[in-house]
Amino acid sequence: MAAQILPATQGRADYLRVGEAVASMLGIDFNTFKNSYKFYDDELRLITPLSPSQSSYNFNPVRGIDTNLPTSSLMDKSDLFAVTGVGLIFTRATYASATGALSAYGNYPAYTYPYAAVFSGSNEQAGLLNIVNGQVALAVNSDQQWNIPADRMVYADQYINAQVQTIQYGGTNGKQGILDLNAIVIMDGENQNVITVNLPAGGTLTNIDGNTNATTRNILGVRLIGFRIRNAANGGFTNGSCRV
Image: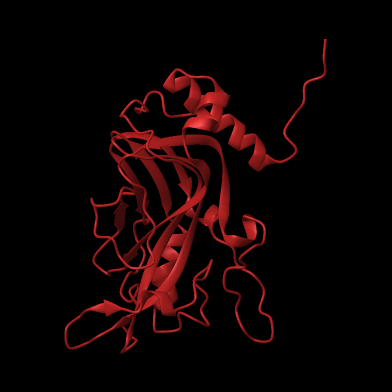
């Protein structure tokens, strides 16, 4: 019997695993699938302003359903997206006190952990730690696919020259606050896909939004890394068949 050839990396293994699953669902072989559809590495970034009155945040990854805030990256309704990793980021936007409007989302560093040296207002980090101590879940058509403690999706680095570390782009997934998933879920743009961040009960949320700062407010981001398959959505990857 010939020796089995295994992929050299986890990423390559995920690529083959997703490609073969999608090809099977579409009723074609893997080579036909690769030649017929655009299938590539991608990342979805779902962001929302934080509020002291909320203990749960829902994100829809499909463009046109929720408000598409600046710096967010969403999938089209016609796409499939296979989620192989998930992470959280903490950042800011400029706040206008006269109107309450937020702007300049792209002008602030993103952090893998709510460092006290950065989120330094009274009870500000304490509020953000409710996110770290919460849960992140994915549901497809109201059926929960995974529910994971949020502290597995953050990375607290050591101080270097008295400065806290922002995301180390190009580093390992772990050092970017990304948790590699064992259960890969394929989100079909024509289905109802909801990512929920639930905060634990009993914590103070008083200044989670950074309202002690006159000109900025805090932003939460959920990062979904994986593979995008363009123009392959058809509602076929339902809650019962989307796990690979």
